[in-house]
Length: 131
Image 1 (cartoon, one colour):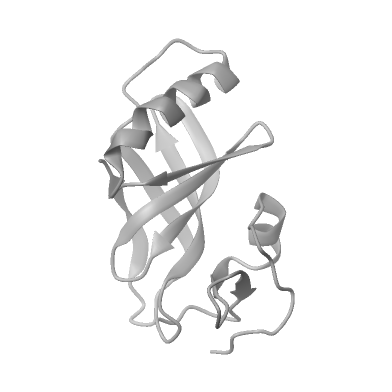
Image 2: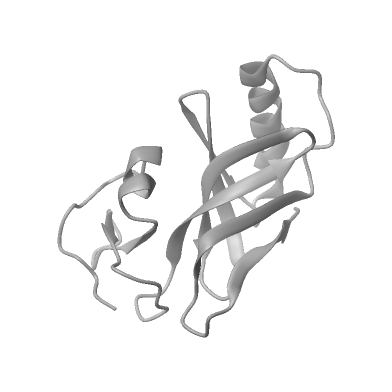
């Protein structure tokens, strides 16, 4: 496993995850660097994942290592990030998603996720997130 020195990103986009499915913080925690393969050696991982809720599927990313405490979704050219440790901010973001989707509100959580990578112990990265 190797942390690459380039490209460096302050903020991650869908295109960045298309290039490299796994990212970590740089040494100063100011930006992100890609990993060549999954490893917990560098702490918090940002992992490309697929999400499903209601009748919708989204591309996005998970944030964490052994467990995931945050995630981001790419929807119609916008990025929505959720920190499950800050539940007071979640309702506003979900409402914004409904507006972007131009859909009626629905039970957004729980949201299901699956990544195309495996962690070091060959464990599949999949599960359910809910505040």
